[in-house]
Every structure is written in C-alpha cells, then in structure tokens.
Length: 489
Image: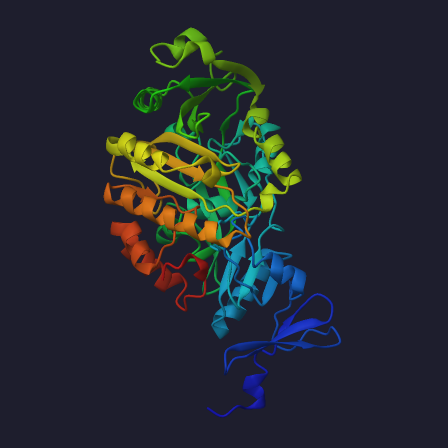
C-alpha cells in the first residue's frame, strides 16, 4: 500500500521526557528514535502523566527482580490517572503495539517486560480508602503496596485476611498471579478475597467487574497473568485485625513427620498462619525442617495458649522458639533481612526461583527427591519454603492447584550472581526438570518463578479452564497486545 502523509501522521510518535521521542510508522510497524524541540508529536493522546523514552527509564523497565531476562521497551508510561492508561492502551491497540503493566517489578523471568512496546508503570495508582470503623472492604489502586494497605486498614482495626511474606509488592501484581501466604489455608489466596476489580481491557475499555458483573472478565483477570486486562483498582475484603500475635518456630528432623504435622494443623485450623522452611546441615544436606505457626491474639482471636496449640505435635521441644509480636511487626518481619540484602548488593543478584505446588499424596516423595539434588551453593543466600494449602479455601479457577485435598507449596528461592550466566542457565534447566517431575505426579506451577514454559505448557497448565481464558482473551484483548512476556498465547 502506498504511503500517504495522512496515514503516516496517524501515529507519529510518543512524547518523552526532555527532547527524546520515539516515532512509530504504522505501515512498517517499526519504531525509530528521533529528536524534537520537546513538543509532543501528532497522534499522542493528551495525558495527565508522561511518556518516557530516556535510556534510564527503558533500561530499568527492561529488567526485573529475576535479573535474568531483559526485554527493552520503546516507551514507558507513568500515568497521572486511569484515563491515561485507557488512552494509551487504545493508542497501542489501534497500532498493534504490545503493552505490559509493571508494579514493583518483582517478576523473576521477564513476565512483565515487553520487547519494543509500552510498559505502563502502575506505581502512581496508589490510592487507598476510605476506610472506617466496621468497614468490610477497602478499594485501592493497583499500584498500592500491601504494606501501605495494611497500615491504612490497621488504623481502623481491620486487615486484609491474606498476605504474601514480602509486603512491598503491588496489589495489582499479586492479584495477577494469585497471592499465596501462610494464611491461605484458612482465608484463601489474595485473589479469593477480591470483591470487585476496575480494569482496562486490551481493547482500551474501562470496566468494573465482580462475581455478579462481567463475571467472565472478573474470573479471567484474577490469577490471569495480565492476559485480558490491566488491573487499575481492586476492592478487597477486610476482617478484624489482631493487636498481637504469638509466633512459634518448631524444629523437626524428619520430613514425613513435619509434613504430617503441618497437614494436621491446617485441617484443624488450629493456627491462623502456617508455613515452614527447610534448612541445610553442616554437610550441605537439606534435612532440617522448621514449622512456622502463628496464633492471633485479641480482638481477632482468643489469647494464645501454648499447651492447647502445641498438643500432639511431634517437634523437638528443646528447640522451640516462641515470641509475641505486634501484628504489623509480624507481617513486616522480612523488612530487616531485605534491607541487609540490599546493603550487601545481593538484591541485585539473579533469582532463578522455583515455585511448585506438590500434591499432598506424593509430597514427601517429591520433596525428598528435589531436596536431595539441592546444594547450598545453588541456593545461595536464599531460602526454601515448604508449607500446605487447603483446596477448599481456594476458589479462583485460574489459580491452578493439584487435585488433592491438601497441596504443599515448595519454593526454592535461589540467589546467584547475575554475571554467571552458565550457572543461571543450569539452574533454569534444573527448574524445568523439577517441574516435569512434579507435573507428572499431578503437581502444578505457581507462576511467580523461573520455569521455562511455552504455549503448549501453558495450555496444559490451565487444563480445563484454558478455553475460558482463551475466550476471554479473544473477547477483551482481540489484538493480543497485553503482556506477551508470559508466553501464553
């Protein structure tokens, strides 16, 4: 088709910080950096925020917490409003430009990156509230961090029921993957505690969806890995918060006993929070186990009683550690450790994480096999988590879990120098081999880690709900511009 001035100026470029712009030719579907006097080029929507193409912005958003994959966008949107996201998604949809939202950038394998497209930073969408005494919900922006949500609701004696271990993640980010934590066995994942979403679809439509309004979209967005819409706001369930908690660390030296006691605790609902860690001995064998359990104090629960709570458990009583903490201090217990990692430069290391859900019926065999192959050098200054979740507490279809009453999350949170690409590649291959073993036994991938997947793997991962996701994708993102880094379609 011959080029005409009117068609070529339909999208001439994206305004950037300073004088840099990126020109887009809709005929060749290619971008080229140019310069101008700083005046926005024709075709860019009017925005409350700003679009950036400077090297620092593009380089930052071509990386993530994994420090493994680097896909460079051509522009970054820092929205001043939800209207900006609507306008820019419509702009990109019209011209077939890929788009990915980015919260805190805590992905580990480029899931929120986009090569040659637009990254939308959701951090400016950080509104929270209002919250009042007796509130049962709070509406927050997608860029709000869970730490700030907790502080705002605790001021009124309220709290979201489920948290991941690390609080400095965005609400939109965790709701796109699931949000599993130590309270999940009782309260469900974070996605199970959403009452309504405000989203921008891949077609650029601003939609409110819930279990009773646009239900198909609601179910396709929660744990939907950003494939149908960008979360811009969420209404979250609130429950009464405790003022204090009692925190228990219970040591075990036998894997089966450790897993069985964890299962007992979550099935009985004896504790409000149950997790666990696996530690290495002096010889490097991962054969030490610590059951971590928390009981809430008033007003959310009765005063904890050690005798009642620990009755019948088979831990080593000589190694028990018990402490009483303020509720927020417990939620934010990782803050000091994260600060130390950042100070030591280890936060910038590669994180080829492995996150799998093991079926309870074979959890012991699978965990023993995977831990036998793990070395302290390959884990680095990371941790190994192993703890149960109950299927009856999980209600979000796209959060895929094994077909078992109790599943166990095995998270091998590796940390390794990013420049040692040979080791990173070897660990990614080991992650894939571990996934294949677990999948063959009926286990699933919790998609926050670094397991190489292709479209066929994703189809199998979603199984009976894949068609639902694919239909929603076709309906709400018909040009397929959203979040290509996941590799699902």
